Image (cartoon, rainbow, N blue to C red; front, side, top):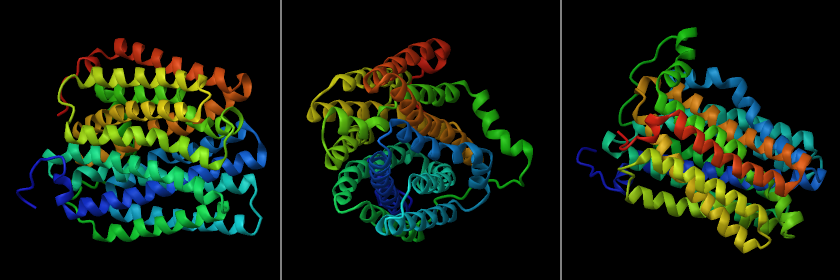
Length: 406
């Protein structure tokens, strides 16, 4: 593998990275399809925005409970094995949900249980996925590898929601069964992954090593500022949890419309991630990240007032593009400023922040929408994201002045 050129597509000349990227596409495709099925089926059964928020909480709680374990496991166990076990568990859970839906034995409690099991699997899967990227390619290819890894999620997020909405017309059991098959395929692809370099150190478990990820982030202000910015900005601006309610009550469309709305952020994010992969962010990285968060907040406010499916899709695409700029900068900063033997534990804490912003953000959006209504809750979230970005620019001046990622 010596001689691989540090070009935008150089990562795909590494076979192991290609297998890893395809496996991530299949897994992310499954998650997006399941997201459509979970949201629409729960809302169809309960007609409750609070129940939609509970889906996010069911995903977040396993991550919160397992946070001190998953990072240490990612630094001590073969990360490929962790991913294989997690995806096999996700395949079995999806198959069980398919059987329950097919036999009309599905209940909200069963859906929440399935969401929680998949949430627990993802709690182990995400730190290993993040930490493994720098082990698959040479260091000069890491920024591009992270950008393309992000594009894997976005590629799947374009196809997944639309496919999930289309398959849901035939029944939720079809969505769950298709997701199960994709998880099995992702597991098989991992058999072809070989590491460029192994994890450097595998210490015995101790209280110090388990908490070291938290201590490392606390002591590195740029990393702390970047991941906490994402935490609070997305926590407040998590309007995507309310898409089933917007599709049904505001835009007056069906599952296919929900699928289109869910794919729109990914469409904008994929276009942006491909641009970033070809033209890496080399200057003013900190300010670009803050600007991206502000654009995300403004777009969230605009989405709240849209009454057209097509305008809503365009606004959601802008939100996705802004979000991926923040993701690529933050992820590159975290991975390159963290030693390899610590990446699992630091990635686990980063995953907790991401999970808090996404899943707990969904819960927050559901609760505020049930209290104040869909539109006020969404406007509040968008304005909150903008305020957080402005405050963080003052709290973390080093991050604001960050120029190059290295």
